[in-house]
Length: 229
Image (cartoon, rainbow, N blue to C red):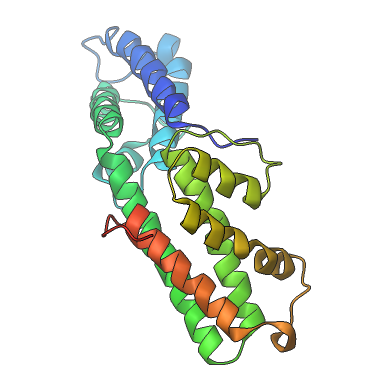
């Protein structure tokens, strides 16, 4: 199943906000949602919180507060909880549409990817080249996918990493030079993921170049540092 695009996510925000507005409009003087609305309210609460969990990084305040407010499925739902979650969802949707939460998300993933590459670099230094190749290859897959999502590109799960790199090049997300470098690492990635590589048949220089190139890609496209070639 393809990853949802930004347009898909924004459409989901819009739908949940419209649904939430209809529910909140039915607020009564009672403290808790009545039995006639409980099922719809519970479904909306869990869908809204689930969306924020999927779209936002762990550290995001909208996500943190929404998770904290989410009631147990067996508990009564207060109108205060409904109103608070509705406000959080509207605020998150607005910031997402402006690219603010997305920037934070990208920085979060960029740091995670850098941590994996640091492990790969240590494995390379220790001579565990096949281990380093697997780590770097996983980062290659995820960074390429994350860049496609950032630029609203929906790819089939059957698309190869090579096809995804070429899609980034067609959209001018990355230069031809950078795309060529990434394409050259696909052989390492294929060998690593199919257990065809051993420490003895991997060139240390190739693995180091792969790590260096991915670090530059992360810094320029996810962490917002100066662009390279």
